[in-house]
Length: 248
Image (cartoon, rainbow, N blue to C red; front, side):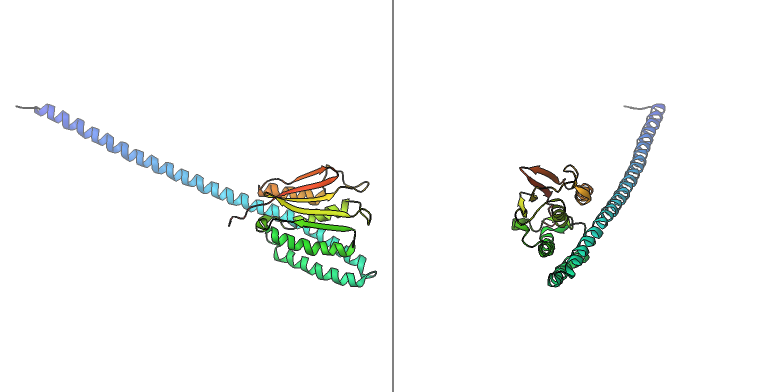
């Protein structure tokens, strides 16, 4: 029995050949287009990575510029304190210089850091508050109750110094009404409180001054939560987000 004659066989093989040719061409075209797609996607990812690296670099530059704006303000106040003590109370001036050297050492050690541990900040705070105790002996008090499990959490450098300085600058206090500052942790927040007794013609309560606005800007740049500033029952309260270390 003959299945195909010569003409039918030729047509069959021609059809089969063109079918195979179309399939192979389609596969080759698909592979070619897929490779172009992958190449374009790779280039897009590379571009996104470069843009992200540039964004991070710009972010770091903005943050470091912001932080550098704070340091001269801090140092200026320290030197003013020393000047006020040298003639009247030289022994206190010496003690002041000793504690100030601790503060300088901290600043130099952490000058290139974006974040430091809460433990490091509390060490700085002890030296800084000692400086202020020398100047305002008996007029200011500090209570600290920080959960030890939070000591490895992170915050921007000099945050506590800025907040204490703000309380000293804008609060009326004397021996009958001392400045009371409390620092404690609650969940993943660091709370700083002081009795609210603002100076006349001081900074308006809705405005938190250069230093406090800068703390807010730092957290915005870091994208790690936002500090809050509240006045409740004659208490000025600041809540600072604690940033969990990536190594935890």
